[in-house]
Image (cartoon, rainbow, N blue to C red; front, top):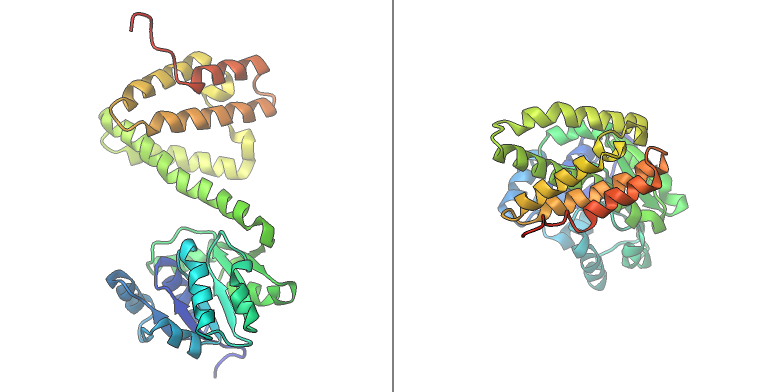
Length: 302
């Protein structure tokens, strides 16, 4: 016997997020009535995570669904929503949720104008598009935005997928998304840069060296915040910071230049935060920023 409140769900976009969330909703006994998939990779993903679900045109999905889940790139969302509105596709009373982190429900104004109910459900997680993501949802939070009367619906859908909903105000969505992108995306860049440096000095398995350090650092930072801060910047070791910058400047001369720029930016931010915690004196911060701002000066005679 079907559970009460089960919905016919249509998935627009069988990317890594859409296919996984569709599978999670299906696991909560909602009926996935159709999915859109254009590329070969997305069609394979749909067949793997949503077996038996028909691949349909987008307008057919909207017509058949009580809940439409839109999982497309941020820059495509507005045009897609307004285009479907011009076709008269949205239906009164229909739930329409997007998975964009950047946007709240304002971008779904054409949906609201048609009498449908706009929701924003963004999983604060990086996806592989594989079934293992379903287990990861159990430790995941979603940033949810909806009209006050509809917020319980958004929250319930997230809970049914096994995750934890956190309400984000419409006006805070961009900062919310920036915080996640800054932490997750830039962590990948940071690890890639560090691995590159180690590999080029002969360390055969950079991941084995960095793994324990980074895991411990992340756990400490999450548990203790800025009190977990250590290292030469936090200690005010200007000579060490200058030596780092000089070595990276020489290295970046033949490696594209992004490592030094990242080190400079993060070391300056670290110095300011260390000063705010009383770890550094004002003159130490000035000295550190001075050796970082334009990179270390060229030695005399060059």
